[in-house]
Amino acid sequence: MTREDLDEWAADQTCRHCGHHGIVIEWRLEARPIGSFSLAGAQMKFSAREHPYAKCPGCRHVSRGESSAGSGNLSTSVQQSRGD
Image 1 (cartoon, rainbow, N blue to C red):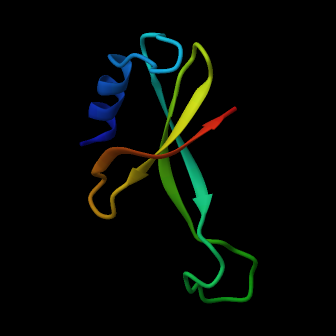
Image 2 (image 1 turned 45 degrees about the horizontal axis):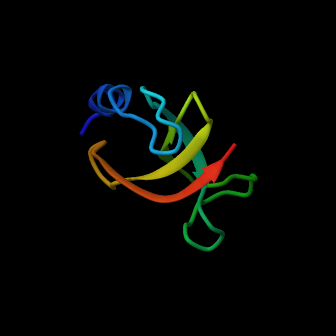
């Protein structure tokens, strides 16, 4: 599923918490844990991965999705829920 497909899918969904129609997908960078990557050089740096978050504009409930490794394909499974 491409980002455009995911945006179209989300716009047609209803929030299960408040019933608002139209979910928004936000892409957030998350740093990988220390020791799980190797980057050469002496400068400060970190490795990050983009994850999709489904956010309801009505109640502001946020659910983190999981991006699959590889060619920009996404899974729609939700790992955990957080409120903003």
